[in-house]
Image (spheres, one colour):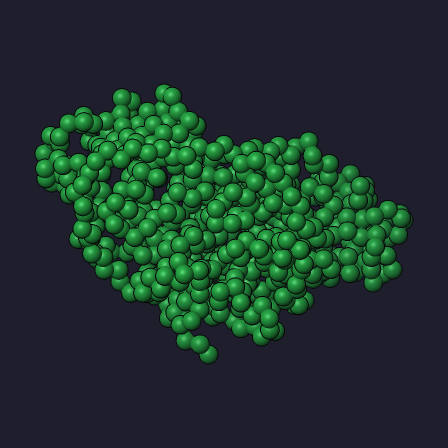
Amino acid sequence: MIYKKIVSGMFVALIFAGCSQVAPEVPLNGGSNVGDSDALSSQTVTIDEDNINANGVNGGNGLNSVNNPYNSSSDGFNSLYFDFGAYSISSNMQSVLAHDIQRAKQTSAKIKIEGNCDEFGTDEYNYALGLKRAKAVKDAMVSEGINPSRIVIFSYGESNPVCNNMSDECYQRNRRVDLKLAR
Amino acid sequence: MISVYLYAIDATLQIEKDVEARTHIAISDASAIQDSKIQNIILSDLKISGHFLVDKDIYYENFDTPIVTSALKNQEYVLKYKYSSSNGARLSIRLLKASNSKEVFKKSYSISNKMKAPFLIHKAIYDINGFLRYPDIDWINRYVIFSRYTTPKHSEIVIADYTFNYKKVVIRGGLNLFPKWASREQKSFYYTSFNGLYPTLYKLNIYTGAKSKIVSSEGMLVCSDVSQNGSKILATMAPNSQPDIYQIEINTKAKKRLTRFGGIDVGAKYVDNESSFVFVSNRLGYANIFKKSINSNSISQVVYHGKNNNSVDSYANKIVYSSRESSNSFGANSFNIYLSDLDSGRVRAITTTGNNQFPRFSNDGSVVQYIKRVNGTSYIGYSNLLTHKSLLFPLGVKKIQAIDW
């Protein structure tokens, strides 16, 4: 802590003022000063989790994607799309929401609701934004009688884009909530 | 209304007004096989320290003989080195007074894993800098840890030296994100696994592979800061589907909810000797930086400019944050990094052009690391706050998800 304060003091002194350094005095005492780098020699690990992941199959089956050729939900659900930075369900998504609620009522299985974002903004904020989108859909479903214990929400932030073009249409497709049955 | 002072200083354009205080030095490569990568790392280390004026040319003289090249005799010092990677990595250095070829410093370094050669070089330049009694630059010896996306829902966590010449994947496969060093010693790090039904925070030792589960939470879970002694962390969690800031005691797993806002609170960092924290919130309708005491409910806004300030880091009572300064919903927006003193409210621009995000302080607060994106390519940037020197290193096309230093 003392170290921190000392460095902090130096920081305060120099950061907002010009830095006027004095060239240091150098002792001319040379000598053979042989050393190694023990602290660097320890080997670090690599862990491969490809065989551990048993979750998160992407892509919809298209059963209810008549009005949306880009539907990335599955098990009969349709994806909902959001405005830039928004997490409220817009009026033009109400029919999709109604469809998903009806689909949810046809099964007793758990439902996984996944929030997604476009690439703008930093990732932690985007994970929260994706979560808020997923929660908006969950809340709407619960208000229509779906048992909240059947719903698991998840945010993928910007990690699960359905396209990578630098276009408004692509960004729109990535700002979405996908639904599927939890397995 | 707090007054805001914007100092439009771009570190990359800073005029070197104190060049005379820096040491004129030239490099002489006496290796049997010259390697431009090694030369560039040496040059980068010397430059980013801000303590040296480095001759742009590399010279080639015998390692053990006095200086013979006349151009070298115009310098203050000549750094002669020999590097070999035939049996591990080996580096020998001699620092000579240019005027009379007197050897003032000599040292040899070796490491069995030649991939770690960048760390040998950093250590050598660190030693020279210390020998010449310049301010400490220990941050060049430290690991950077970052996560990057590979394919949708897949990522990898990588450790690197600060120049990214050394890179090693620590966790491959699955979706593992938000790595954060668990202590100053950098032996373990926290990260979030998104491979199960609920995001789960783990701690992994990079030397032994020992992994322990810390906590899991529905929705999202991110460790955003670690206390100085490593006993507690700040995390964003959403146990009730609502992202808020929590403090978690690592030993007891006891959680304390620190914010209760219906919108988005993320990215908390300790300030004020860990009695308060700064964080990103959209409580004014857009992402901005706020400050809150751990033990009280009062919240204050700390940044008063920018259209979207969605990332912050802290050191003592200083913060660095990224700020979106154009209002395009899509496409090319300008994000810049700012440094602010929480006590005085003074603000200084660290960058003034381009898309710059993920600001991170070095462990001594003297350097700011950030990611710059240009035409789909990422660079890692460093701005030395004390010497105003900046450097960029290319990262390639894979997008950095999160980074810690």
